[in-house]
Image 1: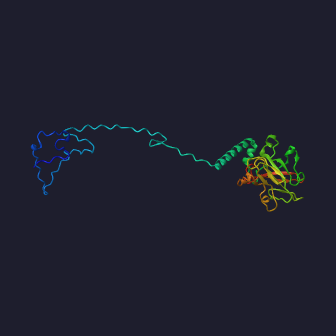
Image 2 (image 1 turned 90 degrees about the vertical axis):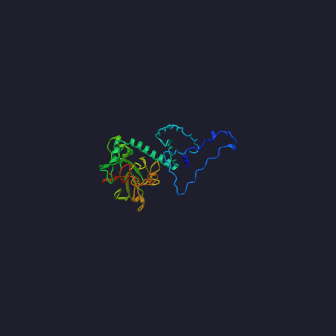
Image 3 (image 1 turned 180 degrees about the vertical axis):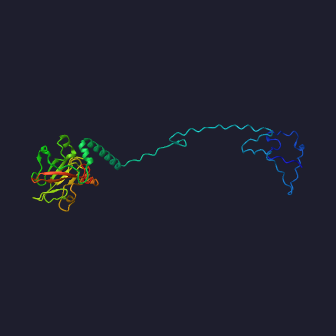
Length: 309
C-alpha cells in the first residue's frame, strides 16, 4: 500500500509549472492505481504534529517545498505621543461653557458690590472715636456718662429743654460730647430729639413723658441703619426720613400702633427690607432736671447697626 501524502504537502507539480504533453492523449501513461479503501476496522495512522506545516492563511501564496520560511520582519514600534496635560486620550479637554447669568443675578451682584464699596467709603470717613463707638455699643446701655444736651445748630451753646421745642418739632444734638470739635463733629455722634405729636406715645423705658403736659419726647441716633446717611425728621409725615435712599422711621405712634410699641422702626425704603436687628434706630435715653433741661444718660443699641444689636 502506498504511503498517504502528508497534509499540507503539495501534490504533484504546481499548475504554473505544467508542460504541454509531448505525446498524443492516446499514448499518455495509464493512471496510477488508487490505494485500496481503508477498512472500517483499521485506524488512520496518526500524523506527527512536527511534520505538519502551518496551514497557509487565505490569500497567502503557497511556499514551494524545501524553501525556507522568510525571516519575520519586525513590526516598527510607533510610540504614541505623550498626552499633554489638559487632554484625555490625546484629545484636548473642552472646558464646559460658563453658565450664563440672568439679568436678576447680575443686578443682585452689582447691588451687593456697590453696597460693599459704599460701606467701605463711609467707614473710611468715620473717625477713630466713631469706629470705637460702633464696635463697643451694647444693648440697653453703652456705659456712657450722663451729659446735658445742647442744640447742635447753636454750636452746642443753647440747652435743650421741654420748653424750647414745640409739639411735632425736632432738634439735633451731640452725644457723647467730648469738647474736641473734630470728634464731636463725627457722624456717629449725631442724634435727634423729637417732641412727639399730640396723641403719639412711646414705651416709658425708651422715652421721656413731661408730667406737666403728658407729651412724649424721644431721641434717636441720626445715622441711618441702611448706609449710614444722616436722616431728618419730617413733621408733615411724622416720620424720620433719609434723603439718600428714602428709608423712613416711625418715632412713636398712637396707642397700640407699631410705632408706639417699636419706636425707630423702619417702615419704608431699603432699611425696612433689612431683618432685625438692622431695621430699627438706636435710642438715646433721656431724663430732665428740675428746670426741665434734658440730659442723655445712655444708649440702647449700636450706632449704624440697630436698636437691638
